[in-house]
Image 1 (cartoon, rainbow, N blue to C red):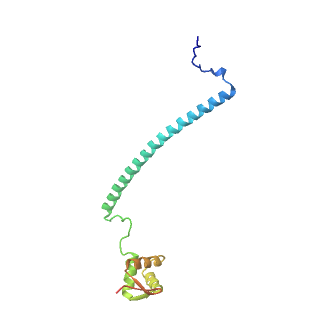
Image 2: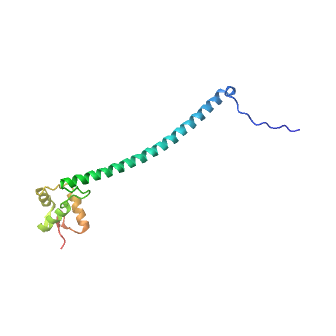
Image 3: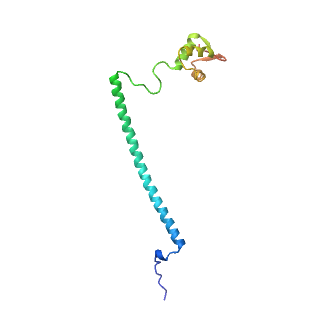
Amino acid sequence: MAKKKTPARKKQVTELSAAELYKLAQKREQEELQKSLEANKEKLIALRTKRRELVAKQKKELRKLDAEISRLSGKKTARKGRKAGTSVTEKVVAIIAKAGKISTTDLKAELKKKGVATGNLPQTLAYLKRQGRVVSPARTIYQVPK
């Protein structure tokens, strides 16, 4: 007659060795850590969603306040991006057109007289050359193309 296999029964905690208890404790600790991380992920997602909603609501309220302020004061709100008035690029082109041919030193002096910052003048002139709005017949000399 063949022996029937009995299903392996789980050992009681009192029957486990120290090494087995340690492994069991580590496994349990990992499972709890994983559960806590998953719970934190869900909380983070919920908090980030709530934050986005609050920021959107706040921006909407600020736009309303700004509109009311500008309506009451009679002033228009400042536009983002380019400032009102003539840009530095336009001023540079105007000075070059008026002078015919002008050196960078003279151009800088003219801009300073008008109270325009000249820190980006080389970049502005390079941009204008790429656009074809000014040409440089000689080094440091600029003119409007004919």
